[in-house]
Amino acid sequence: MTARNTLPLALLGSTALALVMPTATHAAGFVEDAKVTLGLRNYYFNRNFLNHTQNNQAQAEAWTQSFILDARSGFTQGTVGFGLDVLGLYSVKLDGDRDVANSQMLPIHDDGRPADDFGRTAVTAKAKISKTELKVGEWFAVLPILRADDGRSLPQTFQGAQITSNEFDGLNLYGGQFWKNSQRHDASREDMSFNGIEGDDFNFGGGEYRFNGNSTMLGAWHARLEDVYKQSFVQLTHSQPVGDWVLGANLGYFNGKEEGAAKAGNLDNKVYQGSFSAKTGNNGFTLSYQRLSGDTKFLRIDGTSGGTLVNDGFTASFDAPEERSWQVRHDYNFAGLGIPGLTLMNRYTSGSNIHTGGRTDAEEWARESELAYTIQEGSLKNLSIRWRNSSVRRDVGADADENRLIINYPLSIL
Image 1: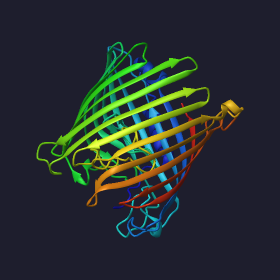
Image 2 (image 1 turned 90 degrees about the horizontal axis):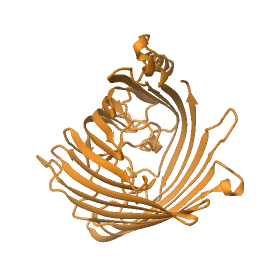
Image 3 (image 1 turned 60 degrees about the vertical axis):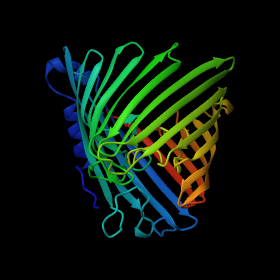
Image 4 (image 1 turned 120 degrees about the vertical axis):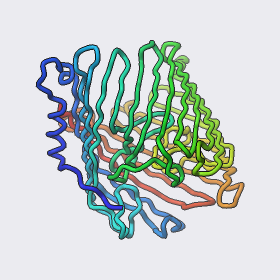
């Protein structure tokens, strides 16, 4: 695979600005509500494989500088409003060679060497009538049954069409179809796949209803990767103040099977999960449990993000066949000690009863921490620095220790 060069960043910027600044007087909302930001992302990634079982490498390492231009217009005036969004993505390698490739920070050439740079441009046309919006094009999609990954140099994007309707108070309805995707370390647009098996279009529909003063949400979703799998998901979330505490719950159930031509064979996966949180002052505590059943691991499009399962983490998702896992997590905001903008997260997740590699009793665990600071004022306001440190140990698979240093600086252009 080779990287594809995109337009230079300056040209991307001027193109986006031109798109969001039409001259027609009837397009006042198109311009007045437009927003253009340029995100500067400096990302260092280092993962050490302790048993050297990952592509015969002892280490995966890369350092990149990325530019993420996000230009979003408003809508033209009238019964039907029209708009345009442009996402310009470009990343440059600062360090990393063939011996430490496969970090998923950069595309890999046919000779095993990481690309020096890569990027792409995603354009989305949109139309709005009342509180219903249609989007056609390519963008960073975040849905409970399809979450684009933004965990490396550049975000994953999907190409397709989606309708979102908010016509009824508290009720959001979604439906659409995606045809292609560009994974986080790829400049090309490819068919979507599961476990390496390519399917046809990805169709989805769902709804979320919020009530009880917006503190309770009930969601239901259905998705199909044609000729590979179908999946349904129901979710209930609730937040409840109790004295000085705020208690929360997130309950969910997935049910997945093969679909159509069943290119990936017979599939059988169910997930039962629950996450319970308690927050007081500057402290947050979370306890989660996740149980899979069936002969198949969790069904998700290759390359998509964690976050759907309650025990998804930086380095592991605990989503193997029949796996049972629990997690304990603590969050602290140092504003309580007079340091606003500084936060710390620590979590430990343990999985057991894994049916993989010929075993039915395999185990794994992960410890993950994130120390983050966002500058609160001055010329560098909103610049954020995050250090992520992780360790994962498995009976089957690669053990690893990992460090990531991520610096983000969002610049508002319009």
